[in-house]
Structures are given as structure tokens and as C-alpha cells.
Amino acid sequence: MVRSRSFIATPPGATIKEQLNDRSMSQKEFAARMDMSEKHISKLINGDVQLTSDVAVRLEMVLGIPAKFWNNLEAIYREKIVKAEVENAMDADVELAKQFPYSEMSKFGWIPETRVAKERVVYLRKYFEVVELSLLGNEQIMRIACRRLAITEKSDLALMAWAQEAKIKARTVQTSPINIKGLITAITDIRKMTLLKPKEFCPQIKKYLADCGIALVFLPHLKGSFLQGATFLDGNKIVVGLTARGKDADKFWFSLFHELAHIILGHVGQVNGTSDEDEKAADAWSGDTLIEEKKFEIFRMERDYSEKRVLSFAKEQEIAPGIVVGRMQREGMIKYSMLNNLKERYEIAV
Image (cartoon, rainbow, N blue to C red):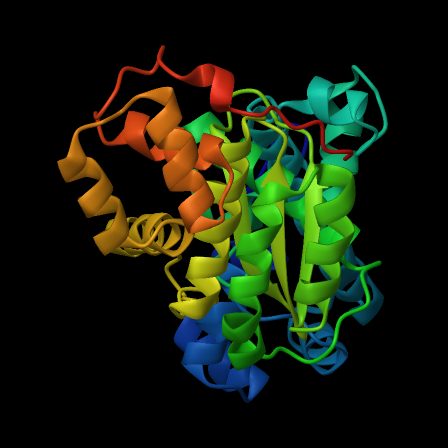
């Protein structure tokens, strides 16, 4: 028996059992008269197997009730099972849908605006391309390597929503076959772009990455996702999504290189996503690729953290001074309130 809020699906076997009780007939005798195994009769009564047309004819011979009755009873039972399961799934998804930042997603134009709970579920299912929202927990559906600042249940769902939009937008990006060696070779040229303006480096980076089988997309930040970037495999391309959250140049470049690190270090496509160790490794690779570790350590040991010295060190490294300041702040060399005038803020079109 399957139940939902509005439906109760009772198997035809319940009626068969009533008939046997009325006749004081055991299931063993009934099985013999039906010329079927006791095991199959038991499953039939419990609704574990389908009542076929052949069985319906046998029931007519043994119980004297027309085959049409049994066939109709089976059809009603199967229909009610579907309706009950659909209703139960909808009720569960209505609760789950409440956890998504639906209003914000609709504001960005990702999904239609509506206040009707069931309509939201339908739109979210279509958006995520799943028959039930609960399937989003399937490891085969969501394999994401990402950089964010905190993790909560709601933030996980916001991350899924954000990543799905990145996947949808990436489908319009034409890419060459995935080429990790080509990406490693391109890193030096991409690093030099830190000295350019967004309108100059954005198209260039997209071209470099597309040639390596990587689709780069920029998306607005979803509140509560604590997300700065995400990387995942989608078909024959790798998708790298970056959020507009934290528009300081150092945060942008650190996030970009962090996501590229996941690709180069082989973290993309892992069944269980990225581990804490993977995230730390990507952080280290990003920081040391932007500013070589040994050279930064020499700079640190000088203990001259004046604006003039930071500018000269950045020039030596051929990198934007804001990136140097950002690393100094993260590593506690200076306070977060210091040298922010050397940081550039980006406006990146999404």
C-alpha cells in the first residue's frame, strides 16, 4: 500500500485476500488451484508483482470474478501509486524549494518569477534538469570544485543554483578539446594580464581558456552562498565560473588562479568533490603562481612594507600592486585597513 496526502493505493491483492478469507481457502491451496508458486501468490497479494492479463484470466476461473474486473483494479492501483508518489515528491520538493534563493534567482532572470509554491518547484526542476529536486544530492549530478568562505545547508543549495547557471551559460561558449598542458603553458601570459583593465583582459583570458577546453563565465553573487568561484566538468569541456563578489583585483585574480589550480592539480571531476586538502593546495598554488614564494619570502624578510617598496616589488614581479597588498593582508604582514589605495576595484560585466 502506498499513501500520500490525497491518495491511498491499495493493491488488487487485498481483494484477493478477502476472497480467500471468505472461502476459508489457504494461500497454499489457492496457489495450487492457480497453478502458480506460493511465492508468486504471496507477492501478488502484497502488491509486489503486477497482476497481468494472464493472472486475471486465471482469477476468473478460480474465483469466478471476471478478468476485466481484475485488470481494471490493477490499472487503478498503478495509477494511484504514480499519483501518490508524485504528490509525495511534490510535497518534499516544496519544502526543499524554500531553501533556494528563488527570489534572487528570478531577479537575475534565471527562472520565472512566481509566489506559488508548486510552480516554484516545477521551475526549479526544469532549471536543474531533474525530475525531483532531491536528486541534486546525487554525486553524479553535482561535482563541483569551488572556493567559498563558509559552508551551510542553504549555502550548498545556493552554490548548486549558481553552478547550474554557470553550466547553462557555458553551453554557448565554443571550446577546443581539453588541453591541460596548453593551460599550464598559458599561465605565464594570463598572469601578465593582471596589469590590464577588465575590458582588455576579460576577452583575452576567455580566448586563452577556450583554446584549452575551458569555458569561463562571470555571474552575479548569490547572497548566502559565500561563493567566489567554482570549477566542474560538463561534457567535453571544463566550466570555470567566477562571481562578482569581492571586486578587488587581488580577490579576482586569486579566485581565478585558485580555480585554474583545481584543473591543473587534477581536482576536477572527483566523485566526492574537493577535500580540505585540495582547497589548501589550490590556495597555495594560486598564491605562489601569482607571486613566487621565494621572492615573496625575501620581500617579507626585508620588513619594508611602505607603499614605495610595495610598488617597486610589484613592478619587479610584473604584477598588479593590489595583488601584493592582498597577500600581505592575508598573511598578517599588514592590517586589512592598510595600503588599500593600491588596490584596484573591477567592474566585470556578467
